Amino acid sequence: MRILLVEDDPSLVSGIRLALKTEHYTVDHLADGAMALAALQGDEPFDAVILDLGLPGLDGMRVLEAVRRSGNRVPVLVLTARDAVDDRIEGLDAGADDYLVKPFEVAELKARLRALLRRSQGQATPLLECRGIQLDSTRRQVSYQGQEITLSRREFTLLQEFMSHPGRVFTRDTLTRLVYGWEEDVESNAIEVHVHHLRRKLFPGLIRTVRGIGYVLDHAPQEAGA
Image (cartoon, rainbow, N blue to C red; front, side, top):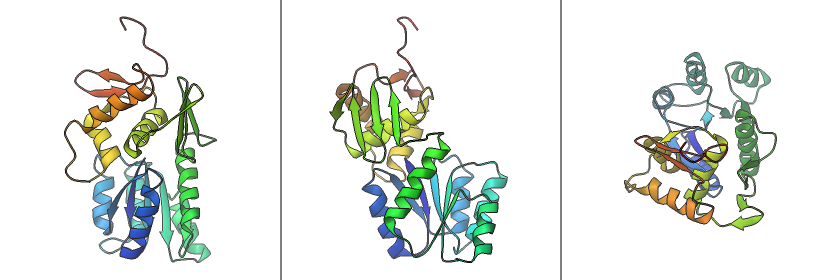
């Protein structure tokens, strides 16, 4: 899952990024409200946004309002030191999906983020199931036909994206940004390598190549000749 963290406190950013990366999230960071709005109004594929309200460039509340006016329904978890009831009401009415007041425990942030992502995908539990595979997003475990499978962080992230959206065709560029974010020096064949490893560790027909476009995890196996 790819998360956009919009926060201007360097120490808080460092702590959140470290905590979320250990949970297999891909975390991109911006410290300026105007830059965050530009990213969210572009074609960047984020699964969720963690948004501070007191930002330079453009206040986080204005960012949130503009994002919702544009029709972008990306889940947004607001982080703020503004703890008055009226502030929380304003944030929720502006389109926030959840609201966490500073200071907070990182464990609570992670739990709220997991719940927010489940709601956005219509999941009642953290367990994803498809074609004999079970993926537990809380425990970060994957099993196939009852046998636990060990995946790297990138492989887990890629599989979670596919299983969260079965039937959706992902382009290679979209998958690269979801798995690596804005990191530099990504090998041009990185996604192909990860897909190859997932097929080898699970089963060959898991992920179908859509020629000239990218990849898809089908709800059910494709019939011969399909």
